[in-house]
Image 1 (cartoon, rainbow, N blue to C red):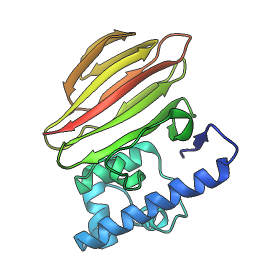
Image 2 (cartoon, rainbow, N blue to C red):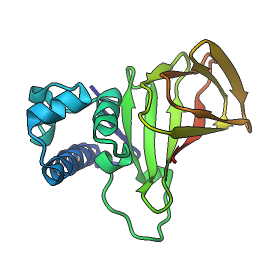
Image 3 (cartoon, rainbow, N blue to C red):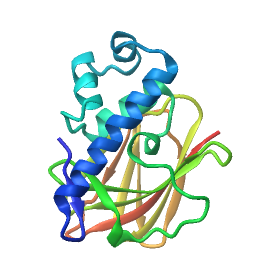
Length: 197
């Protein structure tokens, strides 16, 4: 189960807000596509009971569950968690909430949601020491770009591993499951850009 981290004094309101936003977005997408819960469960690999609970705001889905839903619907992750934003906006970390997983060690801050005219989305990610997070493969032709801000990130794709240090970056095709690991004793942070070609 994910939790919400907010750098302020309205933690409860932010948790309710993002959970409600996920429920609203999923319901809207499912109805626009004309899918039943059975059809959506078949596409995503998430049970119809869980999908129903998410739509009603009764369940807090994990990051991996949200990725399964996004992949099954062939939509961006951010389209499930973000409100529509104005064309020009300033993103400040202390004003953002984080979707968290892996015992709160993997924190995902959605910065810029998917834009169909640009075909990308950007996240800021923090990993606590010892964090290992595996992401499912993406369907279609999807590239991930990683730009390390602090610490070190080990990125593993199939049988290969790449160690990225502060200032390093890489890109890769996300057609296979891939793992991000922080094997240091300090927090690692990086920007993740996902490009849909």
